[in-house]
Length: 307
View 1 (spheres, rainbow, N blue to C red):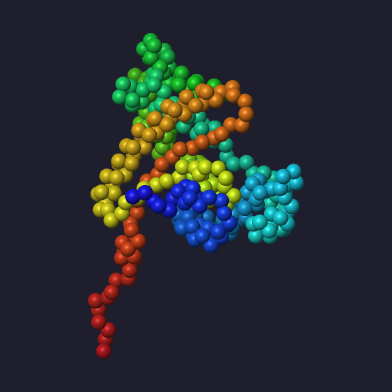
View 2: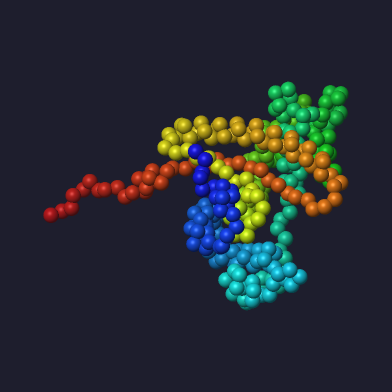
């Protein structure tokens, strides 16, 4: 079934309106549950998260709610966010922290994206073909891995990209010098920092689309943000649906990347503002609430109390 409370659908019907703090708080309480699990899993405690939330509120208020040609005073930011004015001042005066750059992740992901979408790098069955590591190792007229990397970036060498993809478990190199893609999606198996990078960018953009759709002052069309769900499933049926979801995503991903490649080529050299887009999918499987309650319910003791 399609979720009838999807933000894109609700926002499309309701349109712009007044802020709804109670509804937003109710929604955030649910959104924060997996975030709390992430915190506990990785040793993040409340004080550090409070500081991160304060910084996010201040930065967003300054960047998105500043007055035209005037910016925003510390007092106005404090009123908008509830962050104490002293904290606002401290955070605005602090040096801008630059996160760890991940150029190799971006290049590696782009290489895989081009590999599974560009017809020259595909077999007749539309699967990614094995590529000779260099032109010298391949057959005349065949595409090779070095050429693939060069079409994506001239700043990073093919050997460095190959080593990174191999480290992440995305490709394998055969004895005859050919490189094969293990999966039709860039899913790092070994690189924990890369996994956190993709988690942050993907979840942030997904939430960004939903928040855009729920903005009280939104005037444009809602962004795509829909999902489907099914329930009362056995573990075996849930596993089968997950496999089906993966097959559908692999097909959709290839088609979308082919279209995106053409769009990028048509955008080259065109003056004006440029946009960054993300198209994604997810699958979530968990016990239903009643099953969790039954699992956590205290067992009744069979012992009788002494008279």
